[in-house]
Length: 268
Ligand code: DGL
Image (cartoon, rainbow, N blue to C red):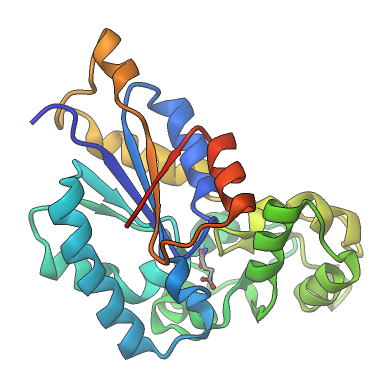
């Protein structure tokens, strides 16, 4: 059973923000990164169709890679399909990514918290339930962005982003009420941490941008504890981490990015 990888799954390159944390915590583990770029962006999909697509795709992925654990570093997919994935594949442990509303509610001083996410994550019942369960004492503003995930992809591929567009997308997160101001913005899409410095620059006032990547990596590590063994010594060096893009059409910019993250591109 040794050498079974950790599988990470996102609609695009956003999950790489979690992969980089996971690598630091688990340098001996082998990773398979899967980007469902053929269906990107997930934020615009109709729920039933997207759920079916993700569950079907996992049938193939689990057969092919036999992961020790599957991580979904994608809020849009997790808030929709985590329960269906666990029901369909009970033999595989799944780690999800859901908006960090609980830690935000614990940390806020002003009581004004914003959740920046894709339109899909914003409209999910799962997200509403998290607010009802953990943030009743706060005023939570849900902000669905139609553009930021794409802007993050462009930025990571081409090194360029239109700061005015970033500014317009984050503007609704900043709320002033009864002399208080939003002090925490939850980054509830794994693509967004790639743009956090631009967001910081364009923000009307300083806030804490909550990125859950390290927490997801720690949760994965704790669930892996005692499951399988990481490959040892020279054997570990032979086993390369791979990336799979479901379109099978990763262009030069993506290939370069993937290489920068220490992954080798494999055909789907
Ligand atoms: N990275 C994804 C998330 O965390 C979503 C991006 C998209 O496909 O719209 O929600």
